Picture (tube, rainbow, N blue to C red):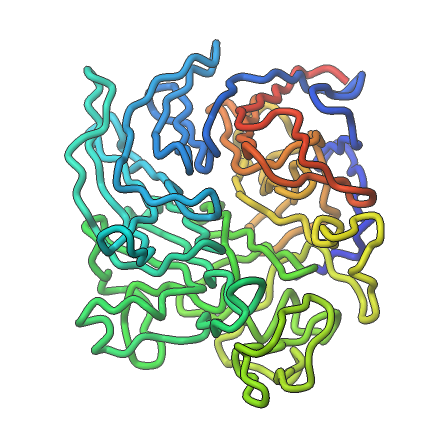
Length: 471
C-alpha cells in the first residue's frame, strides 16, 4: 500500500504510465494532447449514473429528472426509456441513483436494476428510504416496464446516500450506502452508525437501519447470499463496513472490487473491498496515522446536549468527545490502497480565498465515481490496468496505475481533462478509446487554489474525450 505524498503530487508519468494533462480552459484540451474533446449531450437533470449499454448506447439516470435516458454516442440524441414517478428527490443527494446491467443484458436477459430514494409515508409526511428495483427492458418499444421491488426500506437521507449499483462477475448485486451525512452540518446530532452491525432479529424483520456506511451484496432477487460474510455472528446483506460515502464501485483484475470514497476534509480513499472487512470510519479517515483528523462525536455531547450546540467545521466544543485515530483498532480493519490527499497536523483548512465556501479548497477532491481499464484492453498503453476516478470539486479525471495483480497502486496519481465542471460519473467505450463524463447540473467547482465558482462550463451534460493517437 502506498501513500500519496502531497496535494501537489500531480505529475506526469513516463510513456508507460498515465499521461498527464495540466489545468486547462473549459471546452478544450491543450495543443499536442492526444485527446479530442466534444460536448456530446446537454440538458440532463442531474445525471448520476452513466453506463455503456450492450445496445451500443449510453444509459444515464437523471437524479432529479427521475428519468432513465439513452444517449446515442454518435450524435448525442436522447430518448427516455423510463420516468419513475415514485422517485423522491429534493435536489440534494437523493433521487434516482444507481443503475446496473447483468453481463448477459440483451443476450439472454432484459433486466435492468435501478436504485432510488422514495417516500415511505403518505404526503405531507416524509420518511425517506431507498430501494433497489428490477425493471424489464422492451427492445422494440425501447422502454423499461414491469418494476419489481427487490429490497425496500433501506436507509436514505438528503446527504451521503452513495447509491452506486453493480452486478458483479459472480452475478450478485453490489450496492453502496453512505453514512447519511451524519455528525456534520444539519445532521450533526445524528450518530454515525457505519460501525454498527444488525442482529439476527434485525435481518429477520428486515430492519435495515444499520446498513448505513456499508457495501451490500445481494442475490438478484434481493435476498441474502448464503456465502456472504458472517460479521459479529450475523450473516446479512453487509459485505463490508466502516465507510463514509462510497460514490464509486468497480470490479477490476481477478474479480477485485474497488471503491472511491469521500474523506471529511482530506484523505479521500481508494479502497480494495474485501468481504467482512472494516474500513475504519468514523474512527479513521485515510490511513490510521493520527494526521489531520480526530473523531469528534458531536452526537455524544451531554453537557450541554448536542441539540444546544452550533456546528462548526473548525472549532470543536469541549463537551464533544474526541478520539485520535491511533486510539482505535479492529482485527478486521483494512487500510486504503491510496489516499487523495493526506496533509500533516496543523494544516490550514480555512483558505481565505474560498471565504464561506472553504470546503471547495480542502485537499480532498470529492471522488464521485471509479472505472477500470483492463491490462489487455484499449489502444492507449498509458491507461492499461488503471483506475480512473472523477472529481466533483476539481472537474478532473484522476488516473491511478495498478500493480499487475491489482493489489496496490503504483506511482503517482495523474490529473487529466480539467474543466470548470463537477464530474459525476464516467463510462468507457468498448474499445477504451473514449471517456464519457457526466457533469452535475449545478453546484460549486473550483481549482485547488483560488475562489470557487457556481458558473459551470457544461452543466447537466455528457462530455466525450477521445484518444486520437497524436501528441
